Amino acid sequence: MDGMAEAGTATRTPRAPGKEQLAAAALETLPEGVLSFDSNLRIGLVSGRASVLLGLARTGRQARGLAEMLEASPRLDRDAVAALMAACLDATTPDGDREANLRLEGAPGLRFGIRRATPGTWILSIVPDTALAGGGGTDPLTGLADRAMFEARLAAALDRPSRRRGGCAVLLCDLEGIRAVNQVLGHAIGEDLLRAAARRLQAAVRDGDLVARMAGEEFAVLQSEVADPSQAASLAGRLVDLLGRPYLIAGETVVVAPRVGIAVAPSDGSEAPLLLRRAAMARHETPLDSDGAWRRFSPEMDTRWQETRALEAALRRAAAEGEFELHFQPQVALPGARLTGFEALIRWRHPERGLLTPVIFLPVAERLGLMRRIGAWVLREACRAAATWPAELRVAVNISPCQFEDGMLPATVAAALEASGLPPGRLELEVTETVLLASADSALGQLQALRERGVGIAMDDFGTGHSSLTQLRVFPFDRLKIDRSFVKDLPCGSDAMAIVRAVTGLGRSLGMAVTAEGVETPAQLSALLNEGCDAAQGYLFGRPVPEAQVGTAIEALSAGAAA
Image (cartoon, rainbow, N blue to C red; front, side):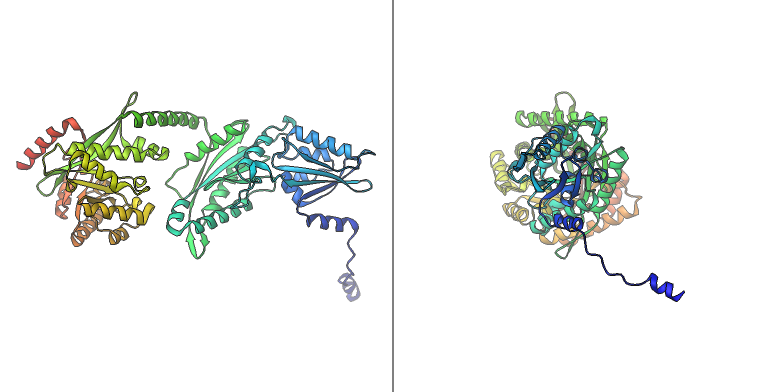
């Protein structure tokens, strides 16, 4: 027994590797992809790099015939396969000793070389086409494919003949929060974050899939051999999970929210531009109030997309032709409800849909880059209107983050005041915490210049941001405005009452007035009075009215305060 056990575990002398093993190992050291074939076009050895460049799935890598292997590649259309087969067949003829170099329209981003290796054996080499789109088809920051490469390979995958065309899916992904990382931590950390995200994306897909960086923080995956849409959904879930996990970059822990849109061919489209557009529609409709999500395209999205495009075109026309108007909501001092001024609120008189509130069109205006023009118009019109009111009344105007970007806000305000003749002390600018986070030192410098001129500065929606208290340390606001989300739960909501009490106390200790927004009921007003709130606005005192009705509102509120 002992002898049998000893014999079973005896150390054997390693067998020297054969010629085929040595050749396979040598292939893996080459920078290009390489496969060998014989005169019957049967496959011999295939390097891993060749499998990657051809995008071969497992079944494709197991092909024994050259035609079968090339047809299994999602990177080659039928014309490219035919041209390569003809060139390889020509190389095996008796007078075919010359080398061939091929760049094929049906194989975007790839170049091929054919040469004899040994008698009876030929080599097909594959290298990335460094001339593609002038940039090699590679994103220089992440090393992924670039947009041109992705679009070309998607078109090639869709152009394959039906007998070998499997389904494919496009997954478009962007990372919400990278711009904030650039602004707060710097572009170097933002670039490291993009590289880390690229590595996670590459690790999540199969060899036959293609990952690309399309632009900025937008990435794309071309998923091949998709037999059922659930496969694309499963991959999207993995991407959301992987990309949403915290990153440790240069000692900083960073979290972003991935949003993925899916379009599956051929059910969601059979042309590359259409699939990309529909994947973008799906991504656009992922919820923004979660840590990350994905959506697959549905026909209803196309309808909404068409409506959005129509709204964008109409909004551009409105900005050019002046279809906006201002409405004004009263602001009163407490406890006597004495009228102190009005907040200017923009409305859009749409030729078909009627009067639209800013929640409908201002996000679109920001996306289209129209907010600076619209914001300057609001300032001019608000100052012009307020100059006609009684001298003790002021006007409050909301300022968007983009109005700080060019550093010209003080000049724009000065021009509006000069044109209208309105004293600076009768203008109050309302900014949100987002303004200070987005433009930091630039915004603070502009706000300080405006305050030195005599313009009032208020922090709007106080308490809804992540670092409102920090902002109070770096800039002395004249006023804090309690967001309506806290006021609506008064007097029953204990948490809301605690927040109102804290903000009013904070305002008193810092010498800042406190205004409550969205006051609609006497019970809410009573709770605010008990906490010592300085001012209020809301439907209880008056709804926003057009400029022509401001005089009537002034008379009504003055009479009510006197009574």
